[in-house]
Amino acid sequence: MARRRLILVPPSEGKALGGEGPPWLASDGAADHPLHDQRLEVSAALSRQVASARSVESLLGVSGEALQRAVDADSTIDSAPTLPAIERYDGVLYQHLDAASMTPGQRRRLARSLRIISGLWGVVAPDELIPDYRLKMSASLDGIGKLSTWWRPFVSALLASEARGAELWDLLPLEHSAAFDPPPRSTRNRAVFLSPNRSGELVPVSHWNKALKGALVSHLVRNPSAGPEDLVDWEHPAGYRLDPDSLVVSDRVRVLRFVADA
Image 1 (cartoon, one colour):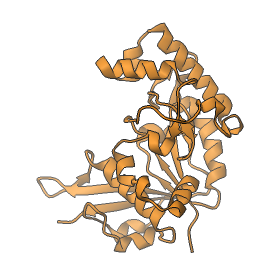
Image 2 (cartoon, rainbow, N blue to C red):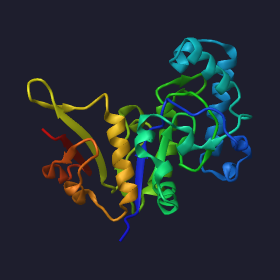
Image 3 (cartoon, helix red, strand yellow):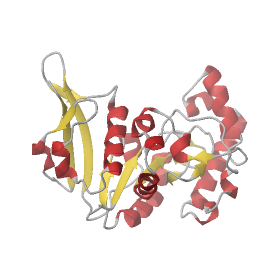
């Protein structure tokens, strides 16, 4: 039997250009989204700050040509063409998630179960139409402050509703985890990938972390009946295996340790 899941992932800094969809405000369902008013407030604050050209390089975290692209994108958020979020985000996690190779049924399951925690949009579903933009969750906007703090009550309320009765997978980095309080009475599954250092000590993987998590999300979506315990028999494409001792739940968190094959 397929499990109902809620899988939380961050957006990617890398984003595809262009799009053929209407501006996000004109897209179907945009005005009815539970975070619509908050999205308007953040996008307006971002547009004002970018237009003022004050501390823009620090705000957006890029320079040179990348800064100009970011400024151009953030200046036209309300009028720019859109793509589905799962196509807009094209960073490493999304490349290894590989939604393009999924069947129609798997894509529908992905749309129901995956949620992207974003500094601009709050919570984004894979099939939502969004423009190109740049805004980190750790950024601070004039009149709003730090986005993770500002978003927390709104994101927490929405996720509490969506997580009810679902198996929750929290694959967020700390920057994005700061934007929500865990749903009450809900056990969270978190994943950590470990490989030996030169001394043979197991340490968290940093460089390939996004790719490894993307492959895990892909597996969960393609195997809807598999629970955490079934991952013991799964061989990760990069050669990681789940340590069965990590299936224990502590303080409503199950930290699944995937260890690189020796």
